[in-house]
Image 1: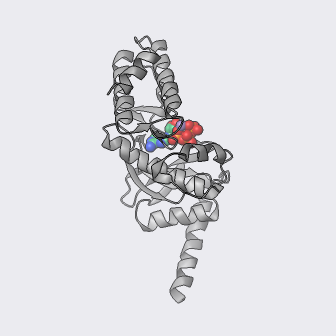
Image 2: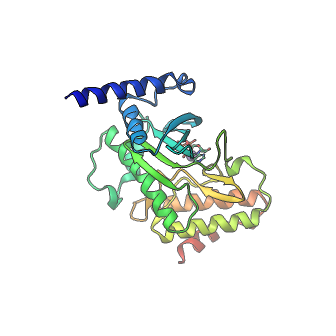
Image 3: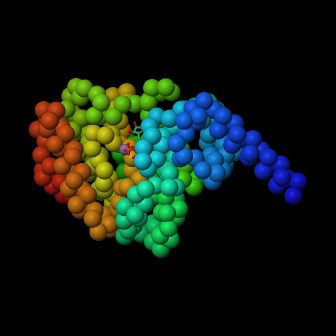
Length: 251
Ligand code: ATP
Ligand code: MN
């Protein structure tokens, strides 16, 4: 009981410290008490040492820079439990054998979604697709490799001058093919969800990626192929959506 009270006090102190951090003065409600508790658990497990400022604030999630226990850089993605589009999120969980029979309420959906992103990162990496290395997941909080450097997160493909569009297109084609061969369709692939760092293209934002069992996986794949091929065609590459789709699906 004394231990429990001490733990409560330590947690309260941690939360206060985090809330008082300069970067969190502008916190827009992504952090409810349970989210602080999740970050606290990640700190105890040494996946997170100190939280840094936001890299990105979105409707679904915020992404922050952080240090791990050893001072190395990590990225922390915090999904909003109060996501406004959880009905849409629920649809993306459909037909996924990994998430059969989950409860349909907002909290359950967002927690599954976070675990889904973690497991999609693992699966993509195993398939040979360059993604941020997944480190830990706790409730609605995902810790992964930071692409780029502290204070200087990698830009998205949409924000850089693509020097060699033919070569970059080849790389992304291969990523889409490998993902598909591993049973996954990204579902939101475009120049906005690929970051560029150190000469590498890194696919991010795989939370919505579905398995090929999903009723809409084919439509989503066609849209991914369209986004990717059209982007590279605009950059001057010889790229065509139908040709990409055929390449990806013809093992
Ligand atoms: P959006 O709705 O803007 O697409 P999102 O909630 O879907 O955001 P992500 O696309 O995963 O979240 O991440 C948002 C932004 O944060 C990315 O565009 C990228 O700039 C940055 N980001 C995400 N993950 C990482 C990472 N591991 N390393 C560096 N930057 C990252
Ligand atoms: Mn995104």
